[in-house]
Image (cartoon, rainbow, N blue to C red; front, side, top):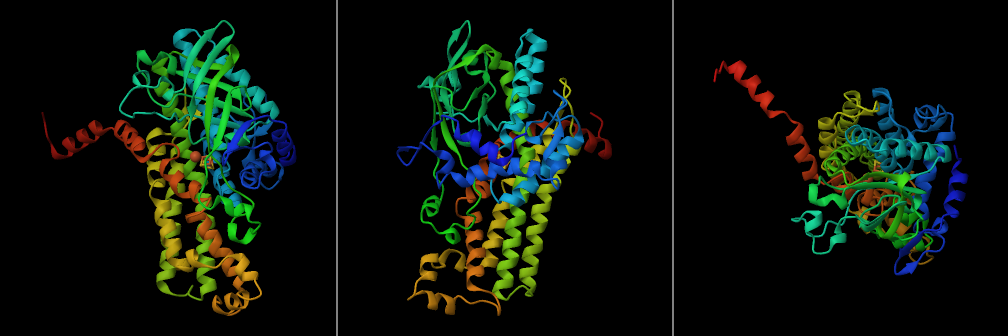
Amino acid sequence: MMTGEQYVESMRKMNMQIYMFGKKIENPVDDPILRPSLNSVKATYDLAQDPEYEDLMTVKSSLTGEKINRFLHIHQSREDLVNKVKMQRMLGQQTAACFQRCVGMDAFNAVFSTTFEVDQKYGTKYHENFVNYAKYCQEHDYTVDGAMTDPKGDRGLAPHQQEDPDMYLRIVERRTDGIVVRGAKAHQTGAVNSQEMIVMPTISMGPEDKDYAVAFAVPTDAEGIIMIIGRQSCDTRKLEGTELDVGNSEFGGVEALVVFDDVFVPNDRIFLAGETEFAGMLVERFAGYHRQSYGGCKVGVGDVLIGASALAADYNGCSRASHIKDKLIEMIHLNETLYCCGIACSAEGGPTASGNYMIDLLLANVCKQNVTRFPYEIARLAEDIAGGIVVTAPSEADYRDATTGPYVEKYLKGAKGVSVENRLRILRLIENLCLGTAAVGYRTESLHGAGSPQAQRIMISRQGNLSVKKELAKKIARIKD
Ligand code: SF4
Ligand code: FE
């Protein structure tokens, strides 16, 4: 396994095509806007070396028998599924940001079981391809991006019906040695901090979408891949040299629009190529695993926000007010409810035909549906407790200035003995989580990440087994048809 430093050095050797603010970023590793997101991934390496977190962060590989980072693991039991969620909560607590590496883990497990079933039906070699690839990633301790979301163009049309055929990523050429693909994947969490990328389809497909039913792996610096960084609220504060105003200066998350401009994929890295009826299975499984993930990572970030809110109340001198206590109780209640869902869908998981373990799909979708709501209420309560000052506090520059500083110091005093600087720090952290760069990961990603709310409602209606429930009611009511 790599140390955090070795990971950073391995990222330095990558030759990715990354663009931000209209410029090519030659050195993404040291870029002040991107670096905090790299630090979050680095934490997944650092903590794996820490004896305190070893049990959560590492595991014995089912493929090689070697000790590996859990982010590269093929889950072997319900306990593995539960430990995954616990690890994600812990990392959310340590980074208060999206640490990005989960998408690869979720892609690993979805592709592992789906390729097995495709091979059973068609006699293809996709599972063998994937197992070899997974071993390669485990041996190098890589970070792997899991790319699913296509731009989708006109949402009312199937992939093959789009005016521009590239709105869903597709095979444009089939060669004897591999395929050439074109298209894009949107909102790619951590793509710029990954050495490898697994690409999957984004929706169920019909027979006419054959060229779109494609899954494969490529290095993130493969020829033809271009990444355009998504900007975040308050991102350029990181350029101002003020650690205080950033709120969380060490960690962050990052997304990119990843363009595949005729990228070659060799045969041994292909995991699906035209077997349209398996596109839906792959999507459902990846989404299910990632909806479980949110019952861990968002809960960990929620822990930090609840702690920050309690500190803001202390610093304001109002922590004994009964309504403040009650708001904090509500925040804890909501946050732990999400955790219950993450643990429940893991504990109720079971083996797939390939032997790896999958979450309970209904419960994972219920988990994510709650995540589309509760962080918003938790953020609302945090802003309520913090007070309006969370969005009106002067900058660090004004706080340090010889003329304005003494006024800030005098009038932003809170409870006796609390430094104004500490008060500003906690307010900026709350701002960061609710409205700033981390709000991408804590709020809007809670809504749309791992699928927007309606995607879960479709799965809930499919998995909810209404007919069984009707029979139960008929039996109790003594209805005989
Ligand atoms: Fe992991 Fe959460 Fe980020 Fe998804 S949103 S990659 S589950 S930390
Ligand atoms: Fe996500």
